[in-house]
Image (cartoon, rainbow, N blue to C red):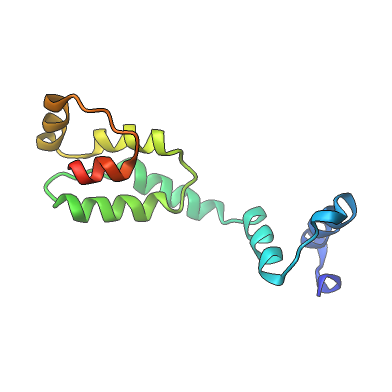
Length: 116
């Protein structure tokens, strides 16, 4: 199977095989996952980043907003701490006020979601 690869993909796999033969791919899915990480669509990542930056709750129900928020950030490689700080700026004013009144610091997105 690996011998059927061509061009740049062949070079990526060849390098892994001969540099680190002990961690060579154990399955086809592992090989495909590695290639997918190397060749992910940058336009798609930019699209989701733009959606994330422009996302606001406004007058949506929190559950609708949060499901869209999690859908978008599942495509991005953001740290949970960054997401927790950013979601507080994306929720509507009513929920922002509730967070500021209670002065609660959350250590996970799930706990913040439950509170809101």
